[in-house]
Every structure is written in structure tokens, then in C-alpha cells.
Image (cartoon, rainbow, N blue to C red; front, top):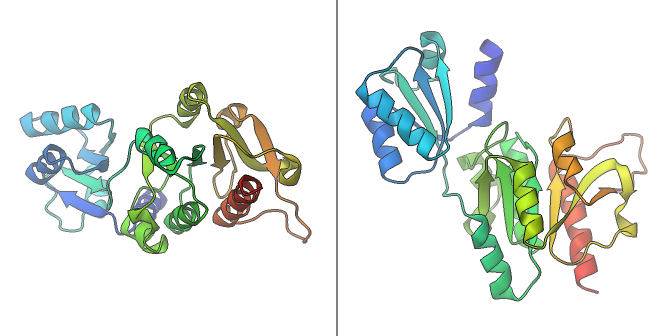
Length: 256
């Protein structure tokens, strides 16, 4: 239990924490992007039921937890049985990314992240996405860092210019994007050398989790699996570095 709490706190570092039933409900009603809601298990009064309805309406992750865990997650001790984590920045829609590409007269170039949990990695990838000309970044709702203040700081301002969308199911989103003309390449050391692949056209670059790489279901949706040549004694790159190397190979091929 202690480890779960520690992981929760690390993954939401410097996220806006909202405590109390009225405060959480007002956050939903004002349109603030809420990533997660923690509710004391057994609470079923009117305000809590309203919060649950709002969370389901906005597809927000709901966690029903014990009193001890809620107390440890609380910063004020006045949570009234409800704590919410709100994103530091607004999330975009995928349509915003297509619009950005259209305005620039370019083929869409999106970067999709399969459960990147380190906010520093997420921020660095958003920074790279901006500099490489990607039109947006797509992240999943579960098992992934959200748009915390740490992410914003690490992005060095790129979060102000690069749309980030949060989706419920990354594999399903890829299917929908294929219908809109995109094809996908994921980074995996067991794939074909990226230098032998044609990475032009409307493309989605998929980068996997820091430890496990791209998940099986997501990898199955990819059209190609690309590897980055490795010449050293270790066999893997940091996720944000791998994203940068792959993104700039896409840039190089687009400049031909």
C-alpha cells in the first residue's frame, strides 16, 4: 500500500490537488481538466453521487479508496472524503492536431506515447515534438503521466504550442486515425532499422513505456516496427531520447 501511494504521488508531482466535495464539484462544473478522483469507499451521499456522475460524464478515472490512503494523499487533512487531481494545462482534441497540420499545409505527424509514466520524460518528448514539427502528442488516460507542472517546466514552454490529447484507449484511437489516413511506426529494438524504412506521409510515431516498451496490443496496430542502431554495450535508450532520434529521422526524410 505504501508503495502504491508513493507511486501515485510521484506520477502526479505538482499536479493541482483539489480537496473537498464542493471544490471538486465546482472544478468539474467550471470545465477544469480532472485526471483522477479519489473517493472514500462507502460514501454515497448526494454530493458524492453528483461527483461520480460528473466523473463518468467526463470519462475521469475514479478510485474508491480506504480512509488511511485518502488521508495520506491529502495535503490539507480536510478532504471530506473526496480528492481530485487536476491537470496543470488544458488537454487538446485530436481534431486540433489535424487542423494544425492543415494550416501548415503538411501531412499530419503525431507522437503517441504508450504509458510514459515519468513526467520529465513526457515534458522532454513534448519539447522534442515541438522542435521536430510534430502537430501533437497523444497520451493514454491510465498508467501514464498527465500534464503536471513538472511536465510543463520540462517542456521548456513547448506545452504552450504543442497540443496534447488524452485518450481512453490508445489502440482504438490508432484504428480511428488509420481511417483518417495515418499509418504508424513504433520504436522497438527488435524491428527493422529506421534508416531502411520510408517514414514519410501522414504518420504516427509510437514510443513505449520506459521499462516495458510498446505494449502488445498497441504494437499490433503499428504498420512498421523500427529499431535505432545501437553500437554500445547497453541495448536501450531513454524513452525521450528514443523519441528524439526517431522524430528527427522523420524530419530528415520529410526534408528530402
